[in-house]
Length: 321
Image (cartoon, rainbow, N blue to C red; front, side):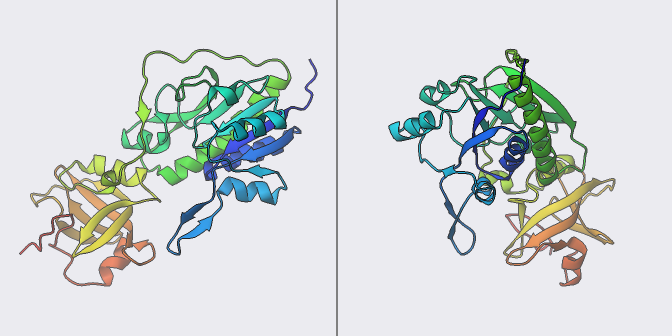
């Protein structure tokens, strides 16, 4: 069967989606447009900024549309008028209503950063690390009304090692998603497009992270705190307090040290940082961002102040005296 070009409408918003858009541009098909979330106010200056997908699409000369809702008749008319053969969605941020799902003749497909049905929802990368999963991956699925419930078209796994942060895993999965998407679109053009239902067993949901999940509880296990730090690195960062100031911990590791110190106490200054007693085990802080300052090594932060040893980190502070 000949592989004639497709008319593709892409929907995506954050950095993760840019890899998918790049993959589509390299496939020889016709990108009829890009839908992305409206510009948002962000940053210290509270300036209105376009999404990463919008910036990249404009650099490539692609038409960009930013409807506030896909349920509005104007949005349905817009998509209908673009006459897409297929809609590709990667981290767009809005559910597609039936009126949109029904438009393209080849349906709508989604690039999702987990091995479905595990971690359906908004934060699959962070949730996989927080849960201590040893493997995750990318799933290409056919979209339907439910949240990430559609049939699976393609899937590929990635091992999560003990040092993997959300930042590193994000980039690896974004690249994988682009490659898997290119293969899927080619299969669609060649008439070799197949899907299978998601398993009923193993369904979990990746809810958005809440602000309280950013705070480190030093009463916990050092290995669990390590997963929290990795899952929140580089943004927004796992947080703790020291003498009235917020510290974001971006890198560290559990260490094989025994202590009878109370949770949160800084028990040792070492070459690559400082050690903090936990409810179970000890955690070595290596990289951090002090409030109002740039990211730095924990060793450099300790050198810049006196009396850290024996003091406490945590929301309820204790001088150790």
